[in-house]
Length: 243
Image (tube, rainbow, N blue to C red; front, side):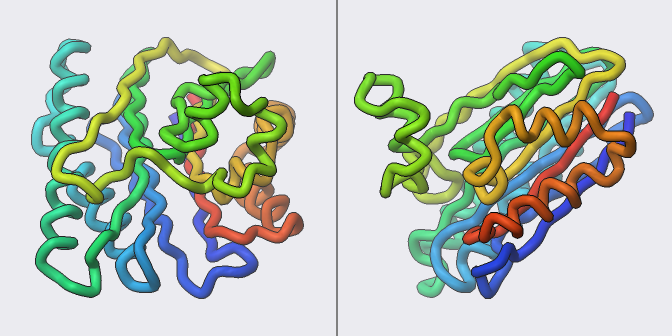
């Protein structure tokens, strides 16, 4: 199992409010986390950092190599709950942090299994040489409108409110997360990314850059370069794991 990561301001923003963490829990297990903060010049960065650190620390504390699938899901949900409390608590105590929040998407890859958890619109993709599949579902206004038949996916890309999310870490006392489980194997990849990338590249473009790459070690940088050539109005972060 190999991994690579990249994070960047993009072409417009003055501060990078994205955060990522990658931790090896044992020789067969990797934990990856990506957060995209929001809430002002200082608060967005604080929210994403607090959430990523709290989530990672809690998973590491509870981790054991003999965990069942059900217990692992409980741990991931508990880590999201702790991350949410940590950010929300700081937002209540510090005036400058009021209203801050962050997305969170994480992958725990153990042997031939992967567990994915998300809140917000940062995404997880599963990639093989034959195709790409978005694992997570965006918690966003446009996704709700697509589900109700009010918008097509094509129109959603140009919709003025496409950046409005319906769930975030730290904005409320409680938050719901989604948890997914999938089988992984040789010649497959998992990509975690913020909307700074997914808003500028469609799935097939991402697939092409990863599946047809001669050196996957350069993929995250190439994805970033493409986003920046297209204007990169937001921070751009990706973590790629190849099995």
